[in-house]
Amino acid sequence: MSASTVRRIGGATLLLLVGLVAYFCLWPVPADPVSWVAPTPPGYIGAHAPNTRLSGLRTIDIGAEFGPEHMAIGPDRKLYAAMTSGNLLRMDPDGAHQEVFANTQGRVLGFDFDANGRFIAADAMKGLLVIEAGHVAMLTDRVGPNDPVRYANSVVVAPDGIIYFTDASTRFAPAEWGGTYEASVLDILEQAASGRVLAYDPGTSSTHVVARGFSFANGIATSADGQGLFVAETGRYRIWKIDSRARDIDVQSNSDQAAVLLDNLPGYPDNLMRGREGRIWVGLFRPRNPAADALSQKPFMRKVLLRLPRSLLPVGDPYGHVFAFDEEGRITEDLQDASGAYPQTTGATETPERLYIHSLHAPTIAWVPR
Image (cartoon, rainbow, N blue to C red; front, top):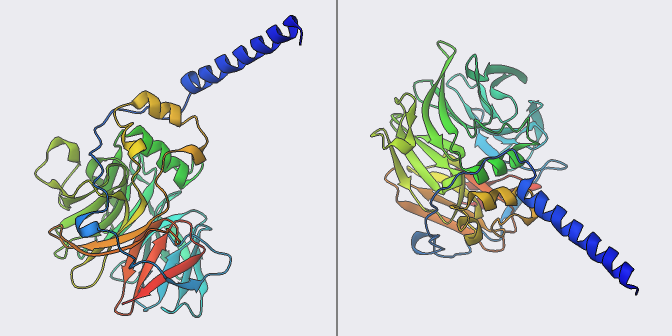
């Protein structure tokens, strides 16, 4: 090989390396990561000691549908499930007689039923919806004229009729950033803690902020007396209890109306669902990855990560995990499957006969007998 050829190859290689360095260091990304202190991962110990109680799940076939992210039993004793397609399925508790109840043309991530049996949905693409007789209508998609709901995630109807729901991120709307997963990646890697809990009053058709300052506000459930709200903060591995009567509090400002109930969880908490005998169920979407936690105080490196293909992000390996806790924060049940055969366990719905397991991407509905 001639010297001139070697020089050309060397020059081209150098240009390529300079280009790659420039890309990883300078290419613009939509998130502006901030530093935070991630607690040391506890691993699977104590109440979360490894077990196989979630292995060997039974399944309900749902045809071409997938992603039963949220499920609940309706007032008609039917099982309802929200799918990735936007379809809301209705079926018997054993999976028989399936039908499409409605389609929101969006992505429902959480829903509940009000005292009149109306289906109240948190649609990540649209906002807070109500569905009656298959007809979809908007309840609210903003707090004020210049304050839109960007990422409606989970919802619960309180005993007094007030509808509480999470706006996971005020920075990244799934409708604008390629869907729910991409928007969640941007928000959690940024750690700007822009998530919030909102309240909608059907009597006045008004919406107000209950609490803000969450790193991806996700699942929500009410206390037994309706005076408290449990909120999953996915991005910082914890579950809060806040006063439902609070108004626009910042949970990071040491308010006496908000307290961390469960901290430093071994995975990313997602949906919250009240079960039987005082249990509140939560799903851990993925286990934590020490490499991701190690970057908590390195915002520049997290910005570099955002320039990588999403398949290369340091997310935890597949691992099925749901558990139940009581209102005092005691873990009362824990079900795991280290194989992660049922992908991305986001929550659980408990009935006297079954525990249905939610999933963001599964092609079936899984359950275990009670």
